[in-house]
Length: 137
Image (tube, rainbow, N blue to C red; front, side):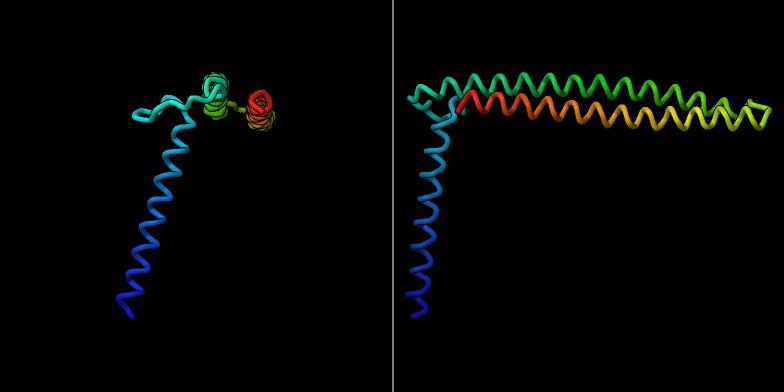
């Protein structure tokens, strides 16, 4: 009885592995350009490849914009750090309070600008993705 149970488990496992292999082969055939996988003869395969290329270009553009934004934020942050270190040179208490308040406001403006840039980039990415998906459909 235990042998029959193990035999059934073995058969189910073998069937499952064969099914997974078949599904993987069929799925891989739909994506042209994978090494060792023959290309699908479907006409839409070329359109999918073009859409992948367009999406890769869009992602590259978004990443470049994010890199530029981060560099700008980093430069502004360094500038504010330098200004913060100069606060020790201020002799008047009222001037110190005014400079500290100014730096604090600028820091929050930087955070707000960074968040707005991230939201804009996200909106651009979603818009581009939606555009590409609707073209494919």
